[in-house]
Length: 593
Image (cartoon, rainbow, N blue to C red; front, side, top):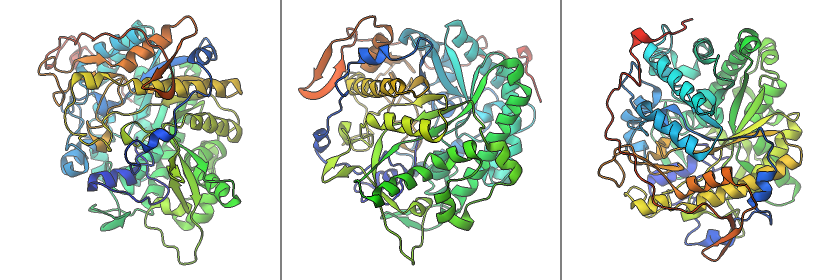
């Protein structure tokens, strides 16, 4: 969920905070004090009752997660190491709390409890990913029967509770063996191995999965892992100094490798879509798409230069991947600015890429201003983002673009999701769209003590997250009223979990998870619904227009949740292998290809 900004920003704080600020446009320099409160989060005069009434009867409301972030059990059940296991253990200093995906949220053994929580919320869909190295420990070869059975069990449990699975095939956790053997996504050999992995997924789960997502946020994977080296596999130009920070990577090329990796990701996506459409869709009847990170850019002002800067910024953001899968080629602005560093699609690849989706998934969190950087003859880029020639800013004349809770990197700009959706509708021929992630964090980098345990009361008190959801759902309903074909909305995330380079210090979950780094001495891996979970539950079950609520005297429109009481922790001690939960290999029926 991390993304490099399109320009260098002045930043302050520890080196970790500086690096975090550079790796994501959603991680910005704190504005200090409560300055962000100058811009209130509002719902433009509409109540959430209006919004709820604006969603069609078959709309999917859900929550989301990913394998490496929640499963844990990284050395159990036949799972092989992924690049994220290696990265966390090799570069602990690049993770805010020096942690890893172990224990995550313990979902490998607690998946039934996860589904129970989903059912209690009242959602009708759940987005999760399949760990490549749990299915194919060495990246290819014979599938791991125990891993196959785990996902079969999870899918069946969801269906038993009338919850529709939305399955992401690749959410960044590539098997380490493929990285060691040929450099992973830097090498076009990855395309065939990814296609084979996708085929195993279609063979084993396709009879019960109707919604497939080939890739999660390919933009973030390219930039986090190959530009500043703050995500796996940790590559960047050696001795890179950028934005006042020295980045330490053993190898890489920050102005070339992101484009190479993106190209191979797109080719892998196209192969998987063609495979599914030709061999599986006719009989299984499902749909296949891709998920993009698409934080919105707003022109800094109405000058022609800054309006063009916004368009160019969107080209280097969502257009980098959407243009190829819709039109078969990269945006013109990228081709003209990146030139020989941007790979070229062969004619047959372009044909395969065109219209290679049944739906588009969009992950939206925040927005920023785009300001033209100007063009000079002696321009020399240091990293990918320099090529766009724009600056991205979170404030204008000292006023932030949106409210920021605890000076976090999410500046709440609900209108951005509406404007983004209208842009996608207009430019990409009105596709079906799912909001596959939307959320806000606790314990942000601006928190004075983000690494210290909070009280359970503090963990539960996240009504600002409910406000964030309500305001974005209102704008989503407005987009639908304007003809955008939005089919579903997934909160990020179901559970507090491992948040990549932020470790366990940034929490997006509707549920607190007691993963032994938290505040409860017992009840290991207990899932406790926060106030936001109770609010979401209420929203999904409400039958009449809500009342409005004011929080702390601020102009933040919010709907009343159901009465909040202290949730009862799950009486679940530290997990051990349960053969009834994860059947032995001999009991597993695996389709191997």
